[in-house]
Length: 384
Image (cartoon, rainbow, N blue to C red; front, side, top):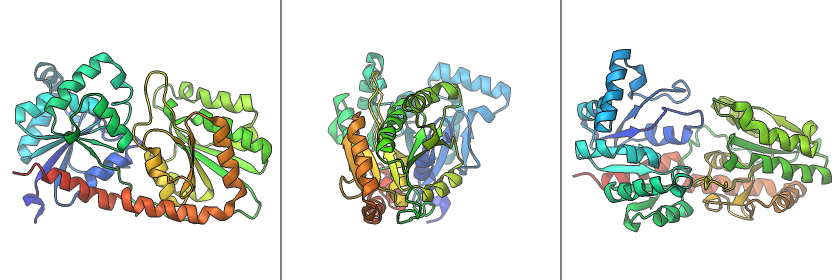
């Protein structure tokens, strides 16, 4: 089948793509039987996540941008998006994030196309706490055709919000294993055990809990260190980091904690080899926000050979096999987290087997090379 003969799917995502957007890029760029186009409002990090074609409202001349905004206000969708869908003869819309999927309903209706939508986290947990969004989602679930979730915890949440069971499918996010080198973790000659926490600097990740658990570990085992590769938001970055800074100061562990800040994706992947155990203390927040399904950073860490200490939260237990590829602890329990960390620090002989088990599990269930064909089989159910 030539590229021109492939059916086309239009992906809507804003922006294309955030700095942590490797998991969306894998879904779009790895398709083989379908040809993808991307529709967005603005483009970010294009050099990190190359893909063509991407059609962006923000890259139009100023008069055209104004026309797009007016069109969105009047019709409910950007005229550019409709034109490009029609020009490419797209047969399907794939909306990324539930709230944007609801925004895409006028476009779906105008074109008469089926719509696949992916939920990722705050769109279902946090927004699902608000009555205005619960009402919107009732319309969304009645009108949309298929809703993809990362695991069974998220599936249950979508069902609670009123979606028919036959419309919801668990589809794991895939990571590019060709880019993630596997290293069996073994003790360093100096005996230092290096823990790592990484991800977007948002409250659901529990990075401040990681610091507090580490402080308990460090007091009992001074030959431990904590590294943190944090991605702060582009606005109010210092404010986002305040809980971590406060935890480091209150626990008096500044000399044992290294804050790396944001790293470009290749540099971030290379840095993983210097660590022994990954920490994922995700939690629910008072406003209802949660991790969503399973953090992609954690999947990448497990693929790299890192044993993981993770909370029993959302779909994390589907990724981390307790006692096999890592250790789980009750969400929010800092003491239990510290005990799990101490166990792994004291048993480095378990690291290689845990890392190998984690890699094998990711290869089976979270491998972009397998998940892309699985996604295309979902698309194929809408072919006429």
